Image (cartoon, rainbow, N blue to C red; front, side, top):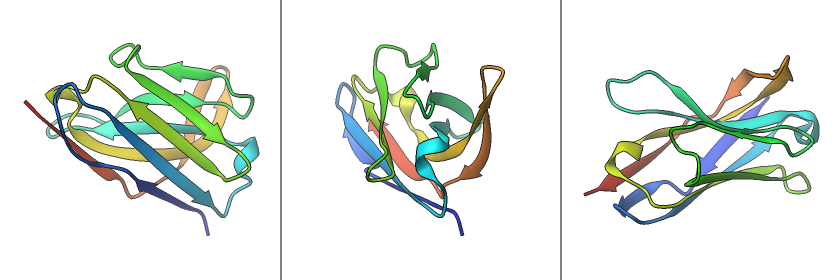
Length: 120
């Protein structure tokens, strides 16, 4: 059974930082592309960051320069460091696992999500 368990969400003031972590089990972590998506109230889900098994990263333009994704294959953990947060970053953040095909991240698994709220 695949499990992606997020942690690290919470309430932070604008300009602050948060680090999200996702512990994966039930998959061969090292061969999967991992990522983070988010969904803000009233908006569609948005893929914000992904990292391939080889460590290549892709960051959405909307968060580039503020969010960094990393992975620890030994611990089966993928992390999202978020800096200079704004109220527009308020959303539920989901951990993703999948594959990369033709440069696109194909998401096969989703975590339950963790709430990030940024106050102004």
